Amino acid sequence: MASATRPIRPRQPVATVVGMVRLGGVAPTDAALAAAALLLVQAEIWTTDVQGSFPALVVGGLLVSVPLAWRQVAPLASGGLVCAGWFVMTSAATGDFPPQVPVLPVTVAVYSAAAWTRGTSRAALAGAVTLGLMVAAYLAAPEADVDDFFPYAVWAGAFGTGRLVQRRSAEATRAATRAAASELAREVAEQEATERERARIARDLHDVVGHSVSLMVVQAGAERLRLGSGGPTAEALLRIEDAGREALRDLRAMLGVMGPGDGRTDDPAGLAPLPVIDDLDALVERLRGAGLTATVRMEGARDEVAGGVQVAVYRVVQEALTNVVRHAPGAAVTVAVEVSNGQVDLRVDNDCASPAVREGRAVRNGGGGEGSGRGLIGMRERVAAHGGTLTAGPRPGGGFRVAATIPGPS
Image (tube, rainbow, N blue to C red; front, side, top):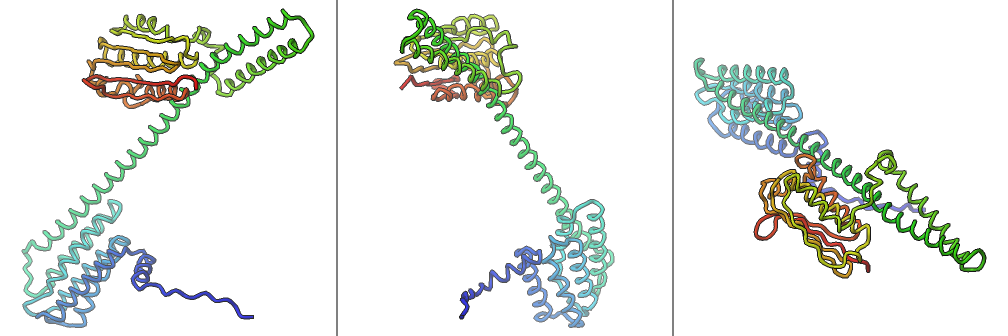
């Protein structure tokens, strides 16, 4: 039986070369740099008036260029070989025209040894090796001047630049790491704040729903007792009572999974009635003693608003006013609540007496410290829980505004 064969796709030459270079741990750019240096050095040997032992010059030209391909992989060895290659070339040269082009790859090699060698001791070794070989190569050239500072200046410029680049690169890496860690910590803090706020919302909703269900159970029980036992109506009312009590047990169980400290049994404040929109006047009155100057305007039939929405409106206003008290005591604030067909439109405006309030930091911080973002997160979570939207930012004509819209029942 003939076996199926797959057609062999020829690899592109460029892709093959790049793959081989990367396989050896060498960057393609460094390989190209080494190839360019090799061409320039060999061109000087064969096309100019350089005199001397050509085999030694050619070998030295290879050493002074090819190791540049490994300048990032093995910077110390690469720098030492390149400088040694220059020493071979200057030692083999005779006449009045020693090789000049090798100074360029030597400078690159010294820079690379300084920039890519890790560790203080290894960097010091790289500096000593490259400096010693450079000075030896320069002095080995015909008619070399012992007092000439040229090799020292070239080495100092290249090595110093390399060390500076490495230091700046390390600082940039550390800064990026710190920024990433800070961003992660901020995201974790926001997530924790969101979870805490959702737990508070769940407790408030538990109280609102639990109150309504308890009222239904009591009314069903009273009506069943009035009608007496027996009959389909009494049995239906009894089933309503049982369903209501089961719903209350489920609500308490769901609240219990939130963990210790989230329940209301040990919190005296949790026994107080939940706030509603009509309690905003009392809230403003309490905060006036803390330096708040505020007016409240409420329009519409507030009894049309569900209990959970009323709690959310109260908490949003409370958070916004508390931010003003903390960051701009004495600022003039206007609270406007409009109810239309069950929809609530809320605005809290201030006159920006404080830069923190004017720039929105107070709302973003929520009184929890610079940049915590918990206040705004909590307000948005409460509004979003009822299908609404909340915005916070500068208002037209100056000042800062927190605005929310919570739709009515559909």
